[in-house]
Image 1: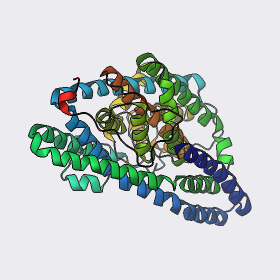
Image 2 (image 1 turned 90 degrees about the horizontal axis):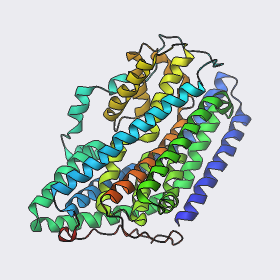
Image 3 (image 1 turned 90 degrees about the vertical axis):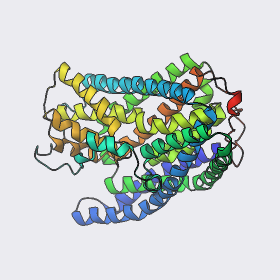
Image 4 (image 1 turned 30 degrees about the vertical axis):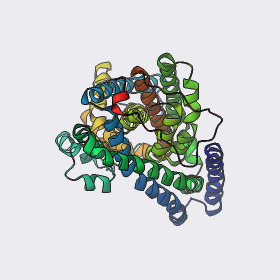
Length: 438
């Protein structure tokens, strides 16, 4: 099923490009009326994508909560939890620095914003991005949920992670009387993964609709206009993939090849839908098949979705310097390093914020006297760039989970690559706490 689904998604992607191009050519985009008509048509196609993403979001909150609580409960003690958490955050910080630095080096070497044959927005134009979405005081207060139910209702992953930490540690402390609740949550994990299997059958249709809508509304010419900028960014993503997978080879060994094959499906899904969330359940299944124990994967992966978005990291430095280049603003090496450190900190403060990368970029531009209106130049192609960012985020979090599991000496034997996973994913239960090797 997984292999066939990947092919269907790719087919939907190709068909979406063809249909979107045909719609754009048939309607035309020279006049305001034609552009309005294209936007209306794109809106109808987008309904299918919206339905799919709503179904995915329906799964995310209960899946993150149940998997993380079960994982913490099976760790058996807070010492193990703290050790895994420190290793995960150590990886997240290093990976973030590598992503940000690579973006900074490449954008300075390739200079996609220099000599740009595009109309530059006036410096005082409104960017349309809510910069107030990031505020340090609000972020710190926002980490801690007022209500576990509200956090789940709003799909706030960061708050769900915090609630799951408290619940998991409490279940561990209570011990035997809490075992029925742990077993119930284990059952919920299997139920949610089964629902994921049902929802994923709709993925090829959603991918087709998303790509058709984007190409129909904006036209294929937008890809040519921003071709050098997009090509430079995707070159950076390819290099980042090579670095992440290469480091995984050094830590995990030759079986990293299996990991790459297992996560193929969630990578394609994230790329096609431009949504990391859409790939979360499939990534969890892929890590389970690769041999990452559920208690580690279900702890590290949700944390990664809040603190380890490698593709988004690279985009932040790349886009910020690109805008500065377009306005002819020369930043010193000191300023660029300060920008890198600023992005490193502020990027951790927008987990769960819609279009988080744009929010962070807009907040950062003003600090370095770069016109915020520059964000308007990249909005036209942000969807196509988001596709690459989302796929890279999946790779980064899968590698992080595998590396942390290897450091803990807890990689289980992998399932055969060529054997299809069962219809209802098993999500192997972790052994009882007394059998743990922590």
